[in-house]
Image (cartoon, rainbow, N blue to C red; front, top):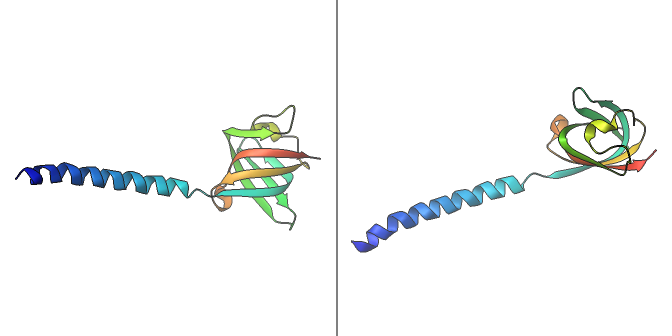
Amino acid sequence: MRSSLLQTPLRAFLVLLAACFAVTVARAQDVTHVVSGTIEKVDAEQKRFAVKTADGTVETVKFTDKTTVHGLKDAAKGADLAGKEGGHVIVHATGEGAEKTAHSVEWVGE
């Protein structure tokens, strides 16, 4: 009888542990995409910018208040890219298709 009293909490603990593991694995599958090219257009109001890659395709990427910009003296956030069209960037983003969201942008130059 005593062992059956211990089995219920042990089962509950194992179920909780499995659920935590499943959540961790699901979150780890956010793939980071790298988009490299020139900035075609920045829409600060819609919080999006378009990057034309070397093969001629245009990737649209969203930015948030947490998106950081490196390599520009006068830019630190995604909205600061407005007016920088034509510059070469390397964008690190998560998501797929039009739902890519940049978490960092590296400014390479004009």
